Length: 193
Image 1 (cartoon, rainbow, N blue to C red):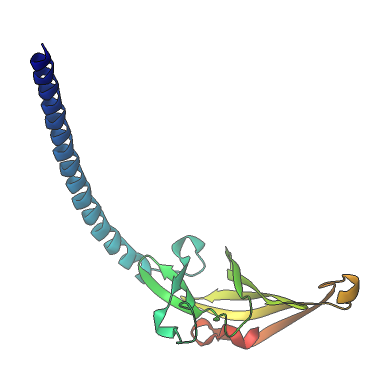
Image 2: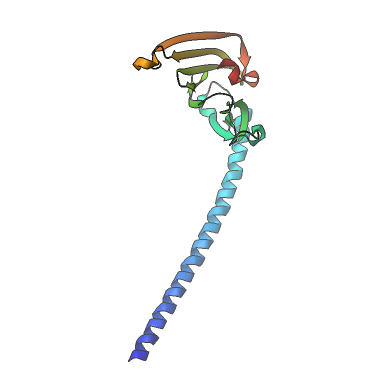
């Protein structure tokens, strides 16, 4: 009887292994088909993206997006990680790049938001530490197929009496209008921080 149970167990095990192998083959085949389909769709998307890049109108906020990427070309030996760039992309094409400051250049720098609007977009950043903090908004407008910096608002917060717990209690705001408007290709963020 024991030999019969072992034989039955071996048959069940063999059946399970065969079923698993069949599932594995089917899954690999489906995955390969999905990969081929994804590759074909990616090439279709690239063709559409190139058409979109040629017909780009910067007033249409749906045509472009913001992408933060590391830029290893800007890395210095003293920096622990790669600095980042803010790319403005239409499809797969980068139409503008803004270099974000390194930690070694601007203490506690943070890109807070990018927001598109009817006339272009705004970027909000902040930085500082200890007794001082700064919040800056860069406004870009659209002319034709290009963006231009036209306004910078800087809010400066300082601490008047840290011994009494009055931290960052004094605020000063300054608006700088850029005339003539600065093309985004010439914009250097650290010059306005």
